[in-house]
Amino acid sequence: MTGGKTDFGVIGHPVSHSVSPAMHNAVFAEMGLSHRYDKFDVAPNDLKKALDRFEADGFLGLNVTIPHKLAVREHLTDISKEAQLIGAVNTILFDEDGRQGHNTDGFGAVAALREAGLELHDRNILVLGAGGAGRAIATQCLLEKACVAITDVDERKAYALAVELSDKTEGIACAIESNPETLKPIIARTDILINATPVGMHPDVDAAPLPLDLLHDDLAVMDVIYNPRETKLLAAARELDCTAVEGIGMLVHQGAESLNVWLDVDPPVDVMRKAALDAMAATEA
Ligand code: NAP
Image 1 (tube, rainbow, N blue to C red):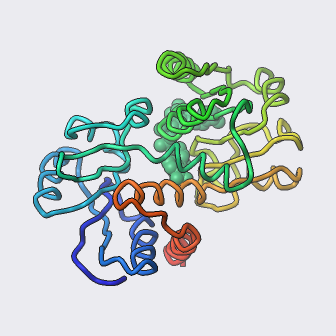
Image 2 (cartoon, rainbow, N blue to C red):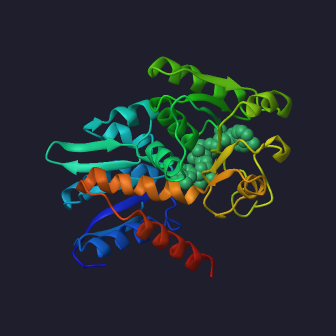
């Protein structure tokens, strides 16, 4: 870290687990930038007061995590097209025009897929989970002109998201029932399968979001879960020699894009990845 006052941070509730300070402070040190990034536990009722205080204190930017990604929108001056489509904000830029809301989660996921050598244009993508991460990823994939199918254990949720995104973007998304019989022929025609559910996350590391015998060797598989780094789903994909994309990639690239929004820089993602992994290992120790 190169010193300076804290002018960036992440707000959430709880937020103690966040590795974002490690990632961002590693970039500031590497690039010789005199900024500091910290984490702030903000209770839902204190959100407006907290934003006013960060702005008055001269903060340049914030990341926003659970449970504030939706509620924060009413306290912003402007919201980017992506964040409007996704319906959530994970990045705030404070500038002379006020508070600008962005969402870099979908961008981060797509950047992680590209980093693994995957292209999205005209590809068949199946997103498991129509929650916050699934919305961001499905939206960005449609903006990248992919063909998107969405499934969720709550089928109404998947259907509502597919209809909403088909209305709001130029792409077409469809909803798929989540039972294995329906998923099987869909997955047979899928190029990229993305788990955007929490199934398989620590401590339930033996769980998988779908029967693993539905995987095939022409699939690429991404898991948004980054704890553990290698989920049961990713391990099964690797067994089949599929391209396997870890959730840490999305985490790092959403953070890198936040830095780009705030400071117009192209940060060293490998430095961010190492800092995030080191911070996670330190938490587990
Ligand atoms: P969320 O809002 O709770 O959404 C998850 C959705 O998946 C819910 O609708 C859930 O339904 C559904 N679901 C659960 N099991 C399923 C299954 N087997 N098949 C299909 N759908 C299923 O959670 P989220 O905020 O999107 O987060 C999801 C995961 O992404 C978490 O593990 C989070 O840590 C991770 N994440 C990672 C990054 C990153 O940068 N790598 C960023 C954001 C989030 P129910 O609600 O009915 O259970």
